[in-house]
Length: 547
Image 1 (cartoon, one colour):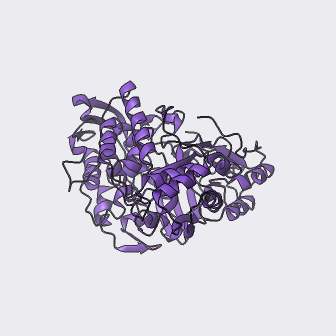
Image 2: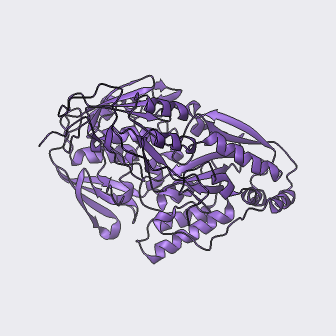
Image 3: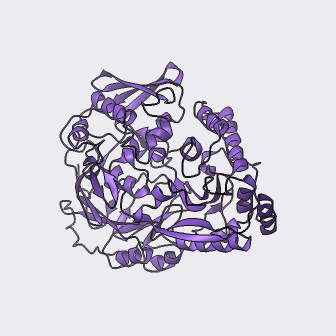
């Protein structure tokens, strides 16, 4: 799939010197080095096992580390808390050698017992804790919890010594090692999980029920939790960190939902960087000497459809939706250059693209004909879209909705706009509310495997689409067990075709996303899977101490 040349290009930027709004630390003095990052939304919680949003993961990545990390150059799995691993029993078990002399932020040792405590917590998580069951990473990867053992790919965790652990699976899971790089599988202190009642959602924060642990997580990462106050989350460097400490002593994540406000905060040196640069702001940022850092496309934007809404369950109706959308026109001027139209849900980067997939060319007249055949006679169709937020797959939701609305209305759909503030529970609404025909959402990949996309979105029934196809679910469950090779590629191509024929949602684009940092930042660990840990940042006004 080629890049859409009509999308707005990101201007070339310079790296002129600048100072931060905070007084710069004296060169060579790392004791006061600070870094402030503007985020598009507040985190939904800081227990990575129970969230699935970019902004929560952005913060928890700094504090909790998993067994497996991500190579910054290739995005392939790399050692992190595990120094090595070995496949056993034809892929039904893995032995991990653990890094020694690692401690949690509370001083507790990281060892095999701690690993098993985390896996058992994820596996046995009670239903009342799994509020957004369908989006929890453990279910997406391992398919079920302990209350459905016959459906789960996870079997058990066994210490083989203080620093060796064996994870048993019920069958081969080819995505197992890549999936362990998900922030959701960050290792938490078992003592903190117990003392902070991690499975009891007794505290309300921003309209959501959270545990005490989700307000004060404890991991092994380079930064420790300090406070979550108002629109800011503050972290401090962990003095006992096993790895490279880096230059930064204090990190602040400041929620600034409005894109123009984020730009002003950067230019006035109130923040040092922010993510999800919009087309409208890119040129000004470049003129002002800010550094725009693009990521390779690794997310998909889609128009979701709820088959529980009257009429949407008719495949002719859904075909009409697909034919009514001009994806090139949608992308033009609303997405950064390199964004390409999507006709399937797995990004080209993964090498399983189906070149012969059933495609729905833009044809508004055919869309009108299909609507007539489906018996649609102009009933209102509630269309949910988020406001005052930017996502890696959707930096300007209001503008994207406006263009989709124009196109669908021209084809005969009677849309009822339902704008919802992201912070008011947009995700919960589109994944649970029955009074919804359409919605805008997307998925950002967190590890390199096709199952991270089709398994997460369509591997089982979810309220988001009210879509049930047991044959497709079985195909997805089988594909994840196949070893890498031609058979697995063919399996995912067949899965993409099945999704295209049933159309539970319409893939719209594989968007390019970009972060921006001030000239104060000499290097920033930009990553297509958002594995961006801030101990790797270099600042112009702080000299890295000599080891």
